[in-house]
Image (cartoon, rainbow over all chains, first blue to last red):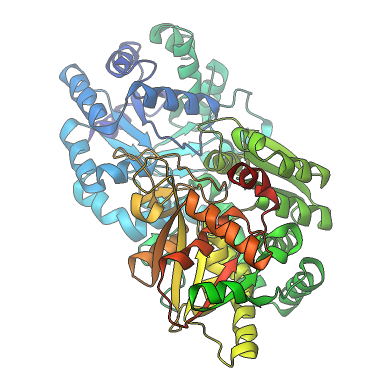
Length: 252
Length: 388
């Protein structure tokens, strides 16, 4: 059982996952930011692998990605930073990013290295369910690094079931049809979609993300899902120099 | 059919649909409607009707006597430059706008580099009364001000892409982001790039080019097939259309790509040489990238060719040796443009000039060659003037 599965075994409610861009705001920030978040009682960390063309992301993550690349961030360096983190921390770590840099590293080598350094899961939004089934499932399952799929309010029931059947850790529920980083509160329509989804009673854990930026939105998603994922809002607070501790305590 | 897409949108190992779940319903909806529309005689006849009466098709196939004499070949020019709006781009936008109407869409979005696809999109939106938003890199808006003005006059809203390098690749990112945020809009991609079914669909709408070539050559020479078809490739939509009906015929297919200041100069867009397999804008293809997989901003004097990728079908044609590639530098393209202007009285678009420059690179002995003259050069006059 990997660290993510262990986490959901002992905690099914109010799971708090925070996204950070690797190498942001400074190249060497990754380790400290992750350890600070762990100390602030965050349950899981998603580390973003920066890409030049992040097409599902809004301005905040675009900006942090670009800055991280300017800082000289890359995947080999990230693996070194994760090794450093793993010296003192057993927090579940998920790497999130676009496929191209992973392909350039070499998918097989990448998955092996993930296993080696203690990465517990991957989110690669541009690997669709179809592409996964067609090209990649064998490699991911063979090498034992689970992939998390996104579902949206527009994903059909049929497809949700197929996604559930391909899920070993958790499903990432995208709160609305939008790029990342929105900071308005949820609409009634969104909440009723959450409720509908909740009523499916899936057999795997589900975390909701996109647009979770304050206590209210975090608490709302925690009513319907196993927890929430915060990305852009945390990056904005980092930019302002707020400590991880005060950010997390304002949230949970 | 071995050079066409399989049912999952793969051309060999390239293509596919590398899209986030957020776009899955959009792409599925599009695929379903396109599959249905291309079998629907009513749709096809509306498409053909507009190509004839609005675009001005068929475009002539012109035997170019001076070029023929100069190069020792029978050189024919497929005159896509004579289309309404001045390039082949409108073949595709007509097809897609009819599809958008059929799907009940009221808003169209598009990306544009030099502005040709943006103008072609704004044009068909004006004609059909659909709302139009065109994303264009901030840098390109400054470089291609006349096309920005055209789009505005046609009633389109031109939105600057201010992220990244502020050129075509970023305009495409912005258009995709808008599409994610506004899934009810219809995204008209301008080239044979993007997730399945776009590469296949855009090639299909552009295939009228080689369909006409075949008929016209038969009339003029008694044979449907030339020895060679030459076209320029940025993303590759005009080449895809010019090659379409020749893919399984014994015809040499030649791609002219932009070498910029030279393939190894660091200022180039020669994707077939400089690119390696990667994923951008929803498909797997040859991509100019760093060793870390970050996309490299290409360079070419021609804004229509400076795209860091290439249509997946072209990547497949190149890797399977079905198509041969010539890398043409800025200077070679400019020379070819001058030769065509002075000897045939036709000012070509800089993009098309890259295809013409291939004539200098091959030793001919009377072969029949068709060059797809994809667009006219009005938009490039300023560049030409600086070169004269």
